[in-house]
Length: 175
Image (tube, rainbow, N blue to C red; front, side, top):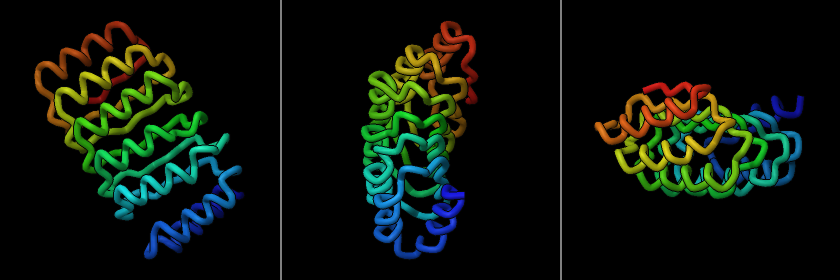
């Protein structure tokens, strides 16, 4: 029941996000399994606070921050402090561009071994960000699904994703 309690508490304190929520997360991250704060205008400072508060969690499996107006600095903060237990990262419908995608790609190259599902649809990730992600994903064999719909994919990005699909047959890429 602890994850549900945390979820309910976060919903109640979001008008003053992030300070009361992050204070609670710092006190009690040990039992946090799923954290979904979608569509709450968290922004980059809120994402950084969430990253700091949850990075030491050994049980966090899902971090859903879709629709929160988070841009490159916010995704960079999450990427550099991503909990090792994380299996699903949802960053759909934010303001992420190439810089954030490249930070995430670097994190995938150096760790995050348990990540199986990555949602990045509805952002502004361009060719260089997609190509870096494709390179990182090709070496990240635990990843099973990546969602990239609604990003501006040019021929170079599509080609990079096709190569990944050939070398990583268990990966499903949604574009």
